[in-house]
Length: 128
Image (cartoon, rainbow, N blue to C red; front, side, top):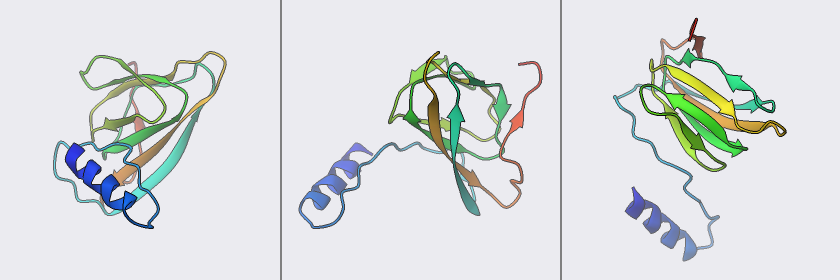
């Protein structure tokens, strides 16, 4: 991954093309037939959290503003900041996605890799 990104940046530097800046790359845990891509901004109020939920398709999120505490699957909770990318694999519970600021809003730009049978974007999980 790193070598391909470096090669891309070097090639662009030697041309008159707009510069592409790689923001992240996440491997998908299983092959996925993607029929449509849904991109949306998710806005969080200060201190607000997205409760436990699951997605039927993989979701890649880029932190646009702010910082978040996030727990995905069995991985330990971690903090992600502006410019960092997360992967929410299909059918893996997301424990939470919480805006760490008590005074400022925060936002994510999320991309859903939806297949033919993926009709809902997410489903909230009870009691988690």
